[in-house]
Amino acid sequence: MSSSADSDKPRILVVDDDSDVRFMLHRYLGRHGFDVEVAEDGARLRALIDEQDFDLVVLDLNMPGEDGISLARFLRDNHPVGIIMLTAAAEVVDRIVGLEVGADDYVTKPFEPRELLARIKSVLRRLENPAPAAAQSAAADGRIAFGGCSLDTDARRLFDADGEEVTITSMEYDLLKAFADHPNKVLSRDQLLNLAHNRDWEPFDRSIDIRITRLRRKIEPDPAKPQIIKTVRGAGYIYVVGEDG
Image (cartoon, rainbow, N blue to C red; front, side, top):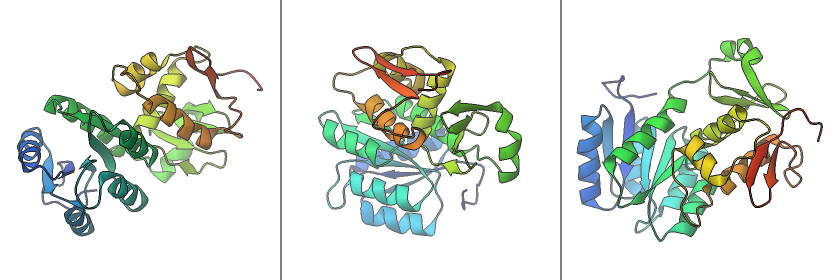
């Protein structure tokens, strides 16, 4: 994916208007084996990503000029990159919107660089393991059914009934895998956050609900009346296996 001279290193673009954050992440991620570029605003991001290939963008949500929501939407529509958003603790609504437009994960400021590093590695695991077209049919027997769709856990990809790939983020994959590992079992939001996102539940954290709403649009015949991933009122969600609905 990379066009860098050192193509073995994953390429990270850090976009933040805070020069201290850019400097710190440039050094820290560089010491941990990444090829890092930095940008101070949306204009610089657009210029860099037109010139170079990146594997993942660390994107500040609240910047002057074009904000992180608009830039995340631009990236998701035009570039096959992972997106991790940096958000302030008070930016709950904007964080939700960021997840809805397709960000893979978020980290709340102030953050531990080690936490961001772990989340970068998690997102890159999916991006670094594309499934060649010739291998997709060979892996079919190992797929897990979600209604008419199937989840290929080797390739970390979701396919529809016609064998066409359905685009999912790395966090959406992790959520499907958590359900696949616990069929017909009610999982609370807290359990799902730990199983799928390696994250503890926070008050007003709606990320699980947002992911499930997005996944239902992709796997349910009628997302308004889900039969595959059902809501258990007051308890959480359940992946239903062995029912006709």
